[in-house]
Image 1 (tube, rainbow, N blue to C red):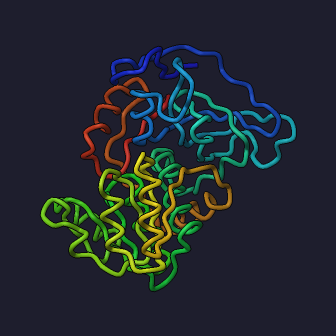
Image 2: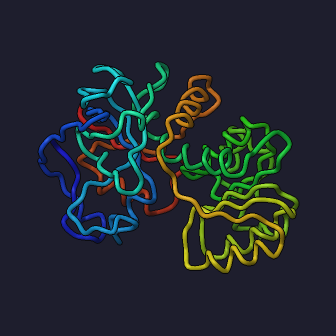
Length: 313
């Protein structure tokens, strides 16, 4: 099968198209023919530094995908050959979606809604599950909550805005002014141009902050939260112990999380997408062979929504 691999850490130029053996599904696993795979910041960070993998190259990146079930391992009963599914591979160890075929536990996938094409389905799993697990599972966002979403026009951010709105929250987003119209179209109630204003000076009394930028965004975000509020950080850094200590002193819950496969949450996400209440914005679609170009685009940090690779016809 064709796949995008790398023999060394480095820039996009280390990515190359290779031929690998097609994997075989183990017990309770499925073999999926990949039709599209989404890109996320973790892909270019892992390509450059190894990220959280803890193993050297060669490896095939990619964690989220949409495709068709081809075969099953022993004991797998959830999906049948020909089923169109989308899902998230185990993060970070389960990478491998930038290829024609991939294997994973069957419950890492759910049926793709009929009205959702493979490109848009592939852009959902990692980003939407990150937002869902942070906002719903960790913070328990509900009607009446005030939620601050940083980098609201990004891959996770624009889906978090919609998930929070679906839960009945009042949503405040930080983004450049050029992206405000896009975010209002997704339901954002208030927007802060981070280039013109310090969000920590204009946002107050929020219940939940979803922080994905890193740097000083965490400490500054504490000033926006009311006592008893929750901040979820998606940017793991050396500041975390100090940040947790400062948050505790203010009566604020502070959590740092990584996404993981979740069959029940993915079904809820699929239901929202099928109902038209969750839409992934696709900034660019490129063929698998142009993975390096896709990485270059993603690393600019200027894309709105997701970049997706198509695999095969």
